[in-house]
Image (cartoon, rainbow, N blue to C red; front, side, top):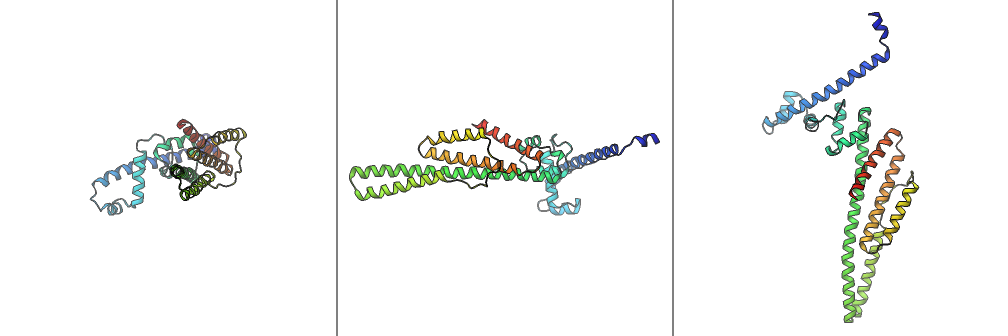
Length: 274
């Protein structure tokens, strides 16, 4: 017995404790899935309007707790990808869309994160997606305005040609003024941009050369369609620079590496669409 005691070092004991903690976390999550399954079953048979009272009197759950447990079951009941995640982490992952969850787990060492670190990572991911969606909305708005201007330019040009053929000086002067104003609005649309913070981490020289080459090719095109493309392309470039800026201020190198992986995954998807 004494020999066994001597061999049980502090590291061995710590390893056993951590193993038990992992087993406990997994047991809690499995139990949560099982409870969620039975709550879903119960909700189908409890009379309408009596659900909250049934929860309080029979299982001492609030409606929000019951909803979390049922969602845990619906999302993870058949999943094998959770490993030894805690209930708190599994709950946090519910805010990641189901179709993106496997990729998120692949790109991030979720098991090594604390629950707070995981929540922060998910929040930053959502904020980045919101900014990208905002840029897309702005691009769509600019595109719609560009199409409207194109129709207006064609109409004014046609009316001006008719006025010149018939010889109506007053109409010619008015239409030329309106046409000039419409062309000014086209130029303003080309110059429109979304303000972003100053770039801390610069775009790599080789990428900057590629971007400049694309800008030059885009500038060689004429028409409203070309203006729409140039505006959208510049918005995309600024959004990418904004991402680089955000990466530069992440203090943890591991987290920065994971975020770079997420950006690389998005770029790969964009390349597939192209």
